[in-house]
Image 1 (tube, rainbow over the protein chains, first blue to last red):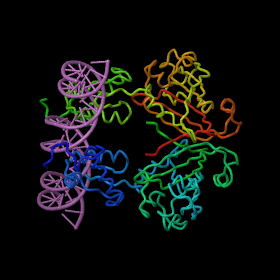
Image 2: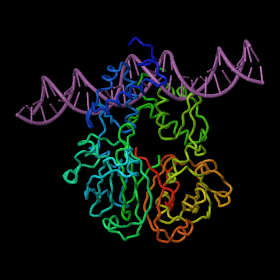
Image 3: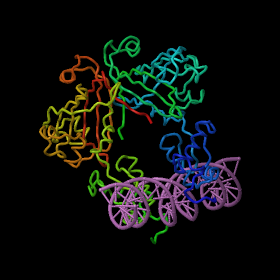
Image 4: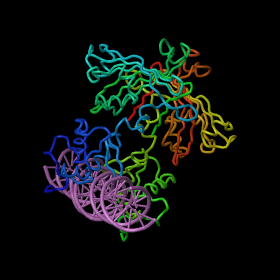
Length: 250
Length: 250
DNA sequence: TTATATCTTTTATAAGACAAAAGACGGAAC
DNA sequence: GTTCCGTCTTTTGTCTTATAAAAGATATAA
């Protein structure tokens, strides 16, 4: 290399950014472009160092940050891999539901409906769409063991999930985000949740087998893919008799 | 230095641990021992490197991890500081309550009771005490703007908070954790919360000015100090008409 | 008095040398 | 033929060194 240590790879930009962060952005771009699929190994640190003309340590620092953000997973001696929702370890990152006592029980998703509609003002705002844009509305029940614990209403941009249907949902035995990732190439990387206590009513009360008016935990979620783009809005009613929402403040 | 690069600072231990992690443990120990107080600057990286006979980069990596865990705060050009609850930025790390719409309103804690008792089986278990050990029970109301939003019942080990009383609580204008830290030298660094929806009853319903039986968000918290030692158990009833519990899944 | 340069101390960045982990491969032992 | 065990290669992990950037303090000039 014929550059002095701290010179930029590109011409001096208006907003300064250290080398390792520029490398991070480049790797991120390749990730978004789908150059490597979820579960795949990305090139080794020394390969990337060669490609970008920087030292291994610099590539390493870029990857460090991406691993901390759960975008990549490192395995010593093996390589660095694109994080995937098919990995069972990543499952409970997006489902914070645990039994009040006793062991973790297996969960099962029961799809109820899946239809198309036009976005109302609220959904459009949440998903960053034009009002009237095509969306998919999906309802499902989450059973833990024998008990129906969560009733979900899920709103998706129609454009990204072309052929999604109740049949496909019923056929699939993967988690929803695994399906989104493998079938539609949409990877969820982050979500925001807003929790409230509400009184059970209508379908939710019925499906969760609780009295009308009894308390339910309402969890509203917006999930984002690369570039902080919102691609799912979800409203879940949680029956918290035997389960609770677990959160760690760290 | 007369050691080869990767030799240990101590005699080879049965459980291998890289150098930077040993340094981290040493810094942690000084922190627990109170060698530097919350808000204080710790010695510079090069000073610590000298003290521990390693390179600055190794100290740096140790501090990196502790900064990621919110134990230390770095400021370029100034130094590295012991994290403190008196810093307003750290406040919302432990209070995840935001208004449904509009700006953040100022919050005010209203202490109601503070008395001593003996630990029952449940509190003893949560706090790792013997049943019958002295504890403090405290009740308070959290007001956001004019509205009473949270009713808290807080259980503390009596031993650690010798002179804590209703008067002291009323006098203090700090946050509770700031008070614990500055007056009793007990620093909260981590907490686990369990959330459920419950029906309002008794005192909680009355103080939060909601109907008996209407839904409330119940937030149970165990907070830990250094060494993962539980030092607070708390049960909070949240009225979620105009506010909600915000959580980020990252 | 006020701005401006200069020096010092601090954390931040980058690169290089080497270690540890994981597997693949091949030959010896049985 | 199969199993075991060393050896080699490729990968991520650790540690050090050199230097840059940030923030203040201090001195200097207008």
